[in-house]
Image (cartoon, rainbow, N blue to C red; front, side, top):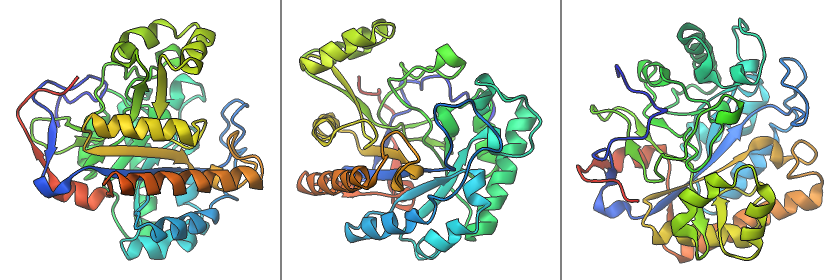
Amino acid sequence: MPGTNLLQPPKTDALARFDEGFGQRFIVTVDTEEEFDWNAPLDRHRHGTLSVPALQTFQQFCEEFGVVPIYLIDYPVANSPLAPQAIGEAVSAGRAEVGVQLHPWVSPPFDEVISEFNSYAGNLPYELEREKFARLHARIVEAFGTAPRIYRAGRYGLGPQTASILQEFGIAIDTSVRARFDYSSSGGPNYRQHPLHPYWTDAGRQLLELPLTTVYWGPLRQFGDSIYPALWRLPQLRGALARTGLLERIPLTPEGVTVEEALRGVDVAIDMGLPVLVFSFHSPSLAPGHTPYVRNPRDLDALYDWWRTLFGHLARRGVKPGNVANILSSVTLAQNELPS
């Protein structure tokens, strides 16, 4: 994939289309990672994997709704025997899928200085980014007996040469692009100009991008791409626009997004005709006390209620669960422009 730079928005002929019977689908991606203090500086050693067994409960919950969760696994989890114990059988049976999530600060080799800039794997030298990916990929294959086909860069940190690494290791889908978000103030990527619609990243159709789904809602949503970035230094004004219902940015996640907001976001995404809605959240939220979003058992019950409500709403709207396997078997390429 020479020359493919995932940081660049796609060309207008890159729109991915799907077979007629595919309809609209949703996927549940789980950033399956270690627990650490989100308010502390990044550290290679101060983390744990106590929340990993909770994946089994979430897996059983998803199976009740016919949902195949996609666990994007980083090195501490891949290196823990708790992970295959929790979800290994489901992965082997096709009731779950695994992918790669690279957190460079906890992924060997540890040759870089820990910093916010280096926490985005795509900022590392090519050889180091590749070696970290290679070791993590091998560890996942060893733990689960299957080669992952999907990738998400930790902190959404793609780089100009990430695509060549993904191609080398047989990754067919990237889902690192968080459309309508900009991380450049801390040295990360800017995805404000990237589309929500799935697209091919290369002329050879070897790597499909599935951007995480974030929509604008409200009377001003058609102007969201212009208004929201202009207010990034004014969070109080952004909050006022959301409270008054004029403009709200809604990512499809149970973390920091109410069920009412998520339902509005889903309806906008469906009405936009997005073929794949991409949900995401962090696996430590499945056990109380590890993330700001789930601090106690009551919060955990609310998280499961959130998913239960969303799964029911998606079913009523005719949006079926998807996974890596059926996306790859259904995707084609149409040579026409990306929707706005």
